[in-house]
Image 1 (cartoon, rainbow, N blue to C red):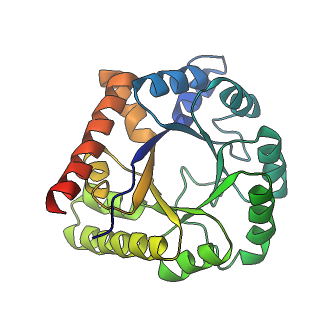
Image 2: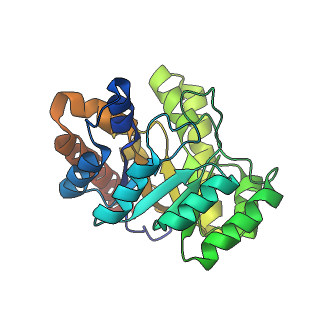
Image 3: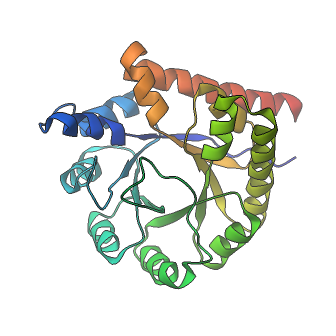
Length: 255
């Protein structure tokens, strides 16, 4: 069995900005949410600066970079404009994701094979600038192998299809998607990639995926913010950390 990596939690604050933008004012403030998340145990903060600025805005990214004490993970589309903003912001990491204006949320993984020629120079620029690049992809062997060839040090496996199947009670699909994630995480580690996971995770699915020894980080936002309405943000993060710890403990118990 692979030795388990330390497990980090990145908290996505996009939906705090979504709520703020509904009224057009300054509150609630995603920076305040980020600071509270860090105090409650987050290892880093994730924010997605979309091209349409539907939630996080340019000023939010600048404030987050300047004022948080933990790493900033800058989610972004692979476009020249976004690359320039990221290079100016100089976050700890960038996560390149597919983006369509008509989507409600990110619907699938980035096609790194089809966009190889576009991605290669962007990743090289980030590597030269000392910014870690993560590619948000499905747990598909060909996509994982291409990510390694592109010299991106990290992939984030899109866990949305698995989480949706679990929530829908579709046992067969959930098991098939889970086995894809298990195999993908093993393959990614074997070709030298650090493996993260994200999209659609709740307490239960986060606990399950935390038992994979290859997973080094989970990035979670929507569930945490939804739970925060009922138990508070700090408590939702503490509960998530506890779920992740249970997952890791189950791995250690079977090692």
